[in-house]
Image (tube, rainbow, N blue to C red; front, side, top):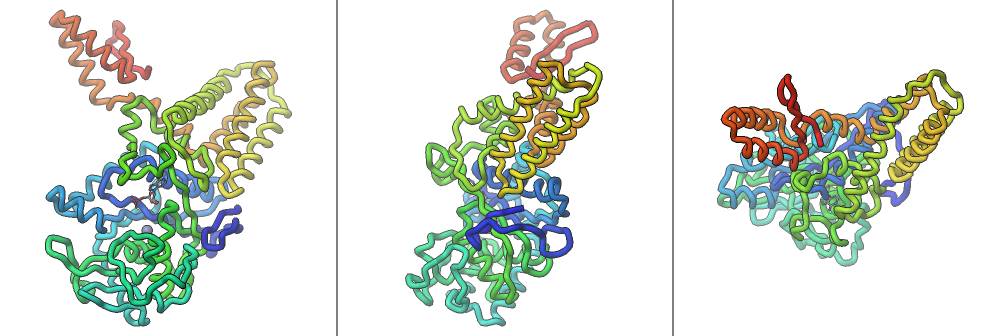
Length: 470
Ligand code: AMP
Ligand code: ZN
């Protein structure tokens, strides 16, 4: 497939370097807050890349996505909450996993946490290797990477070496391109902050060091095949990951760098610092389903900015419903026989879909191909030109589309679950029975209406009460 590579500024032909296995690293969530749908735009697009490589192209995946559970933001958050760092970040790892499931992200092979002992050790080893190869110095108890020791520094972000001030340092995990300075690998221990004595002097890892160490530890010798993340990570995070890894190993770090553009709100990046974020529970509370969010997030090309609006989410819901309505119509075809034209049309659709996905993940064109096929098949159903013999090929094609896009199966799974937790529905049904036995019909109606407002309909019959989705 052709895949845009930030490193070369071009669409390059992608295939894994070794065997049939794609070794891929995605920078995961910084677990100081629940991830918002801007974060999840990146994760959904990377999931579509993963699914394309795996299900469309047949590669095996070795995919690592970390949790950044120690950095400036997580430490500040834990201090503010008066909690131990690990317990504090545990909460957001749990909500990430919940949201990832709700959005149909395939489980990746490894989800390391930066503060796992084995990863901290890998970070210390990386600092040791950089010490040995003369790329570090120490100042005020922190270890810095000397960017002048690496002539290639700045290649990914295309930095101008002119403005860089040799010897000037930057301590924070995130900073602007204009501040390209010697960056911190390992930060001096401070009162009230976690510290480990595996590096001399004791302290804690900088954000950039974490990803390099975990990628190199879990993905085998460099270069890895693909390194992915949101576009804001190009500088400084990925530039610094490259510097550390290449200076330590003497080998290129990653062959491909894939970056997902921003999800915007009112033309500004959705970000916690701007206070314009929505989480999955926020969206669900407004009556939308996670499958519609997934559909919306993957429907635009990943290298184009996507402006989030409630209207666009409604549209995504409508498009998704068109697909499920179409599949229900296909299932209802009973007329006997099969038609070679249908098989041909389905093959055409499959080909157009595969071509679009292999064209730098052109999801917009791939969805276009699906809807063209839906239109053609709907016309065939209307004209009675489709038979039960055609149905398996149609279903198979849509199953294949969905292995890559992951929306239809997600919708089916949602349909099998009420929009309110099952236990709560069952408890409320019991409660309603109890109040009815007391002849308190007003409360019973109230319970029924409240549930209906939340998308769950109750149906009473002689056999008892059942629920269904509104
Ligand atoms: P963080 O937790 O800040 O490290 O971010 C996790 C991932 O979400 C990173 O890959 C970011 O680049 C990505 N990200 C953050 N905000 C957005 C956004 N508004 N649109 C797309 N990706 C984002
Ligand atoms: Zn990273």
